[in-house]
Amino acid sequence: MMTATTDKRTTATPFVDKASALAYPLIRITTGLFLMPHGAQKLFGWFGGYGLSGTGAFFGETLGMQPGVLFALLAGLVEFFGGLALVLGLLTRPAAAAVAGLLAVALTVHWSNGFFWTNGGVEYPLMWLLLAIALLLRGGGEYSLDRHFGFRF
Image 1: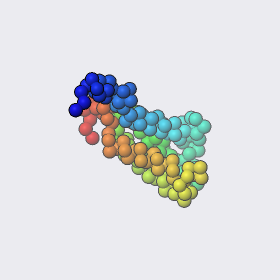
Image 2: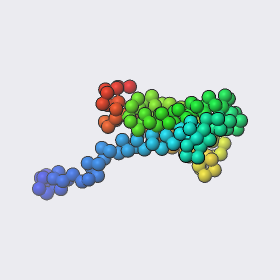
Image 3: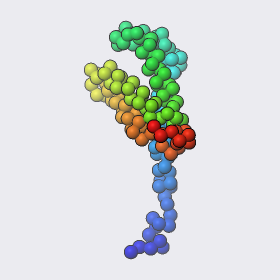
Image 4: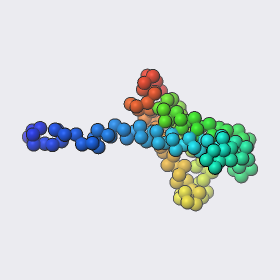
């Protein structure tokens, strides 16, 4: 039997063990932050985006999603405000469900291009979908506004 004097694991906790509590918030916040610019491109034309009218035209004319402006608006709202909700950990599960729904649709758009994102395939939207499902299953976590306000959904 090892004692505290011979087993270093009981006398000193490595930095990684202490920092591991930040792993889940890092995933949740990063997912939200990476989604928000995509929504800003669609809604506001920021970051080289085409705004609502340009994205709506692409959705309607190229993708056949009519009415294009409505679908562009919905996608932009989910990406921007759903991403913000994930960053804050506020209404995390509903936001993650909306993001997952959006990404499920995106998979259908990219399916015919194969797997790799370099060919416009499903790799990138599939990764986002799986992250959204993980956030949906786990919820906001310890460092979230959901936890702070006592939301249990």
